Length: 198
Image (cartoon, rainbow, N blue to C red; front, top):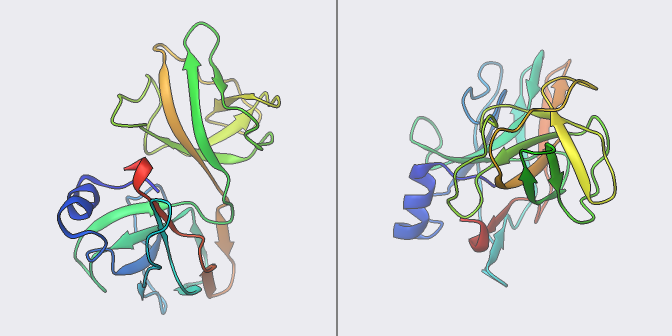
């Protein structure tokens, strides 16, 4: 789960005591869902094991009709407050990749991705995000092989032309469109706070 600067600071200062509520976003951590019966839900965490803590119960976030949820969000209050970060929905596929601008190929062993899967990227261990990748763009996976893939800004489109080498963390998310009002379900143990990824 990519954390905001506020989220990283809170983990360092308070552990997870500031990560109190879960909600949803219609984009990558910028626009929170609003309207209908939408409300953030309180979250509690398992004890830490192997540097990871998870949600210890299924969460059900009410979503109004006509909304597409792209990622979930973690907050430090039931309303207002601060965004602590956002997380993938509908998939647990995630990993790290290295890439070179000479071929625009992302190398990630046995990644499990398929063409047209949607992924977002973030920095890895504080490194700079390779240009022109963006933290706020939801990419399509293209040109998949067992240990490699490329990213595009459109389904089946041309791959992003990288201008710098680097490493990233990637997360598959499955945007969910709510034609009718419903609930975004976050199964138990699906929301990971991984200390190795901070």
